[in-house]
Image 1: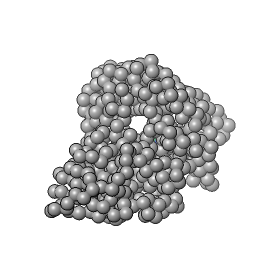
Image 2: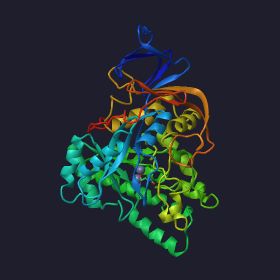
Image 3: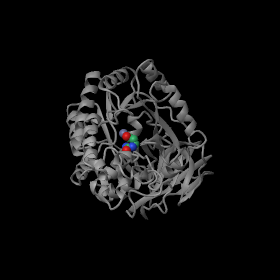
Image 4: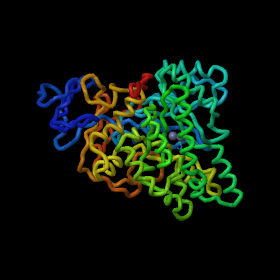
Amino acid sequence: MTTLIQNGTVVTARETRQADVLIEDGVIKEVRAGIPADSARVIDARGMYVIPGGIDAHTHLDMPFGGTTSSDDFETGTRAAAFGGTTSIVDFAIQARGTRMRDALDTWWKKAEGRAVIDYGLHMIVTDLAGAGLEDMDELVGEGVASFKLFMAYPNVLMVDDATIFRALSQTAKNGALICMHAENGSVIDVIVARALAEGKRAPVYHALTRPPRAEAEAVHRAIAMAEIAGAPVYIVHLSSEDALNQVREARDRGVPAFAETCPQYLLLSIEELQRPGFEGAKYVFTPPLRPRKHLTKLWDGLKHDHLQVVSTDHCPFCFKDQKVLGKDDFTKIPNGGPGIENRMQLIYHHGVNAGKLTLNRFVEITSTAPARIFGMYPKKGEIAPGSDADLVIWDPNAVYTISAETHHMRVDYSMFEGFEVRGNARTVISRGEVVVDGGAFLGKPGRGQYLKRMARGGAWK
Ligand code: URP
Ligand code: ZN
Ligand code: ZN
């Protein structure tokens, strides 16, 4: 089956040009102006940008957490992602303490199988390196799990000690995988949390007030220092503050292979959201927390200047009515996480490109090409060139859209960006040559998404 996308403006991380894109058997065959249609199905992209499908490198679908399970599964979550122009995700499997990582991989493959609408990779959350942990890491790299997440927060749940972190980093120095770090000093935060509870401070806003930016910066500093000692790269997930950003920038300026992502919520929302009346602030309880407004411009600057490389979502939805309510009388019991998989491209395009903070090419880079490189998917994903998967979005720069829980496709009863109006949206979304979304209609099928076997040493560092 051949498809020709005609008359569009092709935008990659490197360049912007008028070109047609010929697709054959799910793969890009040719990119140039004036490709004859012959017998191909033609998609007219006049007035549109043709960009690589978005890659969301940080999602939590069907994840048990905080006494409940995230409300989107691999079907509803990937379907919502596709509506927003995302054609690949990397989700997280969790090693239960005392068990083998292979068991977790099998469990997460089962969650995705028959459900995923777009392609998906998996990171492994490491909770235990006793026993065969280090060999397990090598085995998983062979299965395409080219990245591992470790937690410096959530003592007694997911947090691991520095020795474990250092051993994991040292293993990746050998096997070429990438450690993704949840960098917050969990032990210090726990003391501050206990004090707050003892003083009767139980409202959602205390979630943010008990997790100061310095606790994030300290952990980022420690993570990078340990990575340097181990001789391994490190990737800081969901970076939220200027303090933490300064640590990454300082390391990168010294030539250290430190990478970091931020998320739309940290770029567009601030701590005031947690002070909404009643229990509404719980909708914005996730970790690290929202920060005072002054941090937002610093994060945008960081994206512009490549101190931050990626925008992911950390999509981890919990319904307000049935799930967030678990913490009605105690902020520590509010399930941590928020929804966003559907809105990442719209929000970053509108508030980045339209607002003059990012070029079009940088928009493509941080939402697709950089995560493809860093996580070992490039040039199969994140590129518009012969041989790459035909994961493409025909992006309408003039489409005006108002984000709302009434109309979104995520299985969650609120939006963190309710009422935000954006200009620029995905019109046609193509995954491996198949149109999965067109003009607001879903044309994909559950189960068509394929597992992405990712390469170690993805190519983003030497
Ligand atoms: O609050 C968050 N971020 N929930 C998801 C788990 C994590 O730490 O990424
Ligand atoms: Zn995290
Ligand atoms: Zn996360």
